[in-house]
Length: 262
Image (cartoon, rainbow, N blue to C red; front, side, top):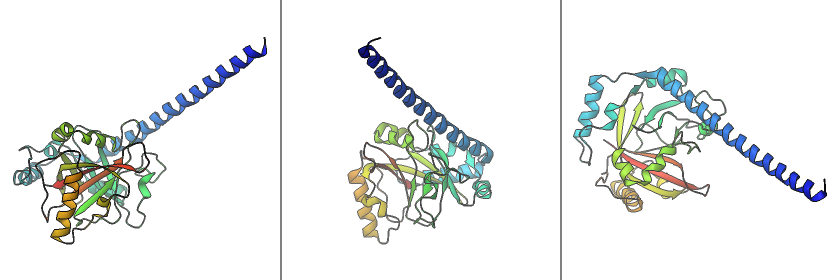
């Protein structure tokens, strides 16, 4: 066997090893992400409860009194409830459960004011996880004017990956409602803006409205920079919810989905 042929075989073997390693890495990552997402499904099943007629009526009444472009039967009322009390018994650092109907987004939300990014790469039980758990900005409280929740954009569609669909106005129109269940309430928020921004964007500094003028300035910013327009313009005193995830080729690229409480 001549040297040229040996060299060719060596190159082919080298490429084969690289391709095999890449394939193994992709399969391993996909399986790991699936297993981590399955754990959340188990948690969801263990704390799911039937929505009472009283709770359903309360959310419907709130929606029907809204001055937004809401549909009369809000999506949130058709979603299962989760017992946040049971979640708190499992992990006292759990703040809420967040879900968006007809998406894969249905996860607990953590809150650790003294350790802001604790759940960036930890699962619900505090063990290492590449998926992490969605978590609320450490600066936020129950009374914040804008609650900001962060979640990973995973390669195979779990966690907050479905938020990227909100770049489409059509998707927003069919998935307007975000349900946030806390230990005290079952809150429905309606999406009014989606922004592609950087990690240091102006919006991330908005937790407290402070004054009507400052609140209106923030809302104007969101509306003007949104990928599309809706008929919803929040007013001073309204509570907001912002979901944030990575989107784009740059590590600092972000997508914000912003909603107002109904």
